[in-house]
Image (tube, rainbow, N blue to C red):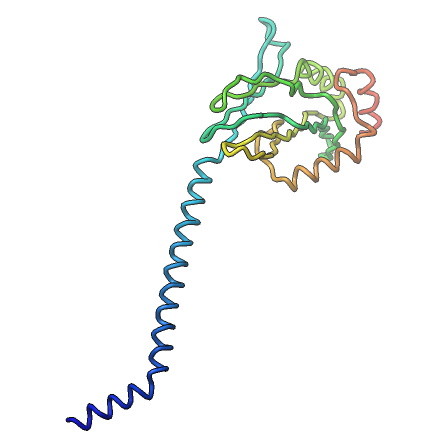
Length: 222
């Protein structure tokens, strides 16, 4: 028995460095594991905080009639913010087209200028209803233009906006929306492609209110 104890002691002495290295590896591995877990928890907490402080912008559209016959109206957009406070809300840029759908199915986009009255009304609120803007009386011009080219096709307006605001941390955020005929948020890449297309075509841009002049341009295009 004594000889076995002596052999074991000698074995441990000979392999002391090995066991020390093994223990160090075990401690290091445990530290790395704990660190990774802690980092994952921290990232999750950060992500939760970001989601809790990310504004959700919603845009709705309505029509305001100016007479009892409901033939003369203004299209109005209402902007809501939910989930987190914002400041310095602004519509930085507008891109609009007169979209012509020919009877053969082909579509033509003609750039529009000053379609939106986007220098609208700030409500002074940081949450809930925060902004309102409209398209002045362009709806009447749309109706008259549509009537004049009804034999060739139909029209509507495609409109896009770039929005900026400061989030609750003071960081400036920029987002993009299509607001007509659909209302939907769009990606930055989609906005940039639309912006480039409008810039490439802007030499043919029209004011919707110049109806007679526009009708001649449109008939030449279709």
